[in-house]
Image (cartoon, rainbow, N blue to C red; front, top):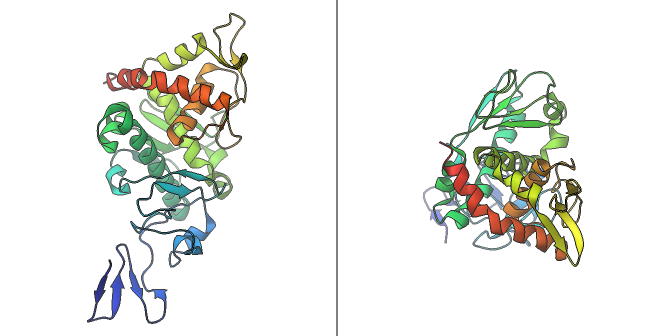
Length: 300
């Protein structure tokens, strides 16, 4: 199903040219599809050098099926929901600023991973809103800016400011400081989940922080065991039940805001634990996501 150009005796495979005579790509991949995986930086490779298992129908991501509904997480090796919309649809939805000089390879990998996370969120919210994936993200988030700031003023890697501003991070920005960029390749493997976590805070913020208020009042249980919430009148209950570990649980802080952002990671990627506790978290998110998204859409 690919185009063979007889004049140059090469095959056009969508994103690059292939020479069947020598069994090699003769042009580099136009992007680094999954910068969390070191193999992806060999831009002359194909599907992480695993062509018997993986395929690449778009030219930009290694998948397990022709429709790219299933992809393999490049670090954990787990099967995940695929991102079918072309990534180009999402490149104009967020902006990037760096306050300090940035290594071009690191900055490119950071930008691309952020856009991957934006695409994942847009795809999931599109199912909720009934709009296109890119339009669904824009309606819920506007046009946020990801900013690399100097120094280390943030408690953790990042801080989201979609309804408030600070001296080091302005309104409408999600800021990353030296605690991430000091060792970027070690941290890049969990960046996509972290971006989704931060945008979970962003959805909550643009929705008047209703999601965390709902979680603070909830009493999520399974088989009579407490999972999350503050609805028992004894303070907020934070457990790891229903979660996979890092990087799917980004912040174990005992607050409804952090718990909601982690539940957002699980919901967007459909990656809660396959047990009654994971099902309880998923069902609670499923019941509220349309409301919180509608509140975020009304922010502007």
